[in-house]
Length: 163
Image (cartoon, rainbow, N blue to C red; front, top):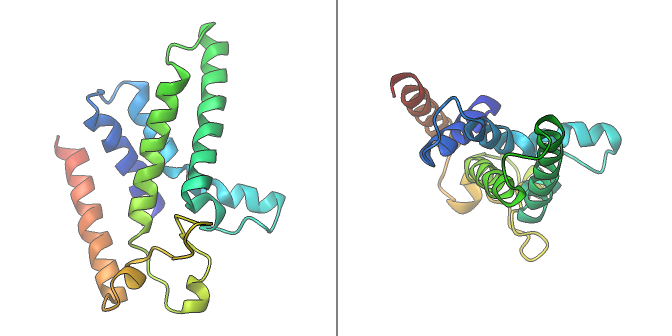
């Protein structure tokens, strides 16, 4: 899925927990939902960090969650002289955002097995299976992937605009 949909899905997940749009939590879950794609910044440090590889595993997403939570907690503690949100709560909200990201990325489509070889292997190193719509469902086409993204994007926009 595309970046705005990752953020909007995270925002809606934060809202589904009962937080109003003016609270910090929905924004934080939206940032956490986009955080696995921060690997584009890591790639500038080392070519070892390609997009969709390390940060798109459960281990990598958890590491991103802990990093985001620690930085956020430290900044909140400095600004408010003690964080108004507990560290464990920040971790739980970030895990929710990261989980929405991995769920949506399961609807990606890779044309060849070579391009598919290292992306979105959520359970690596235990299981080397790339989670894409065409690896989970052998009959899935790129047109189906596009249709899913369009329908989902319109639904998310509708929920945000009309709720």
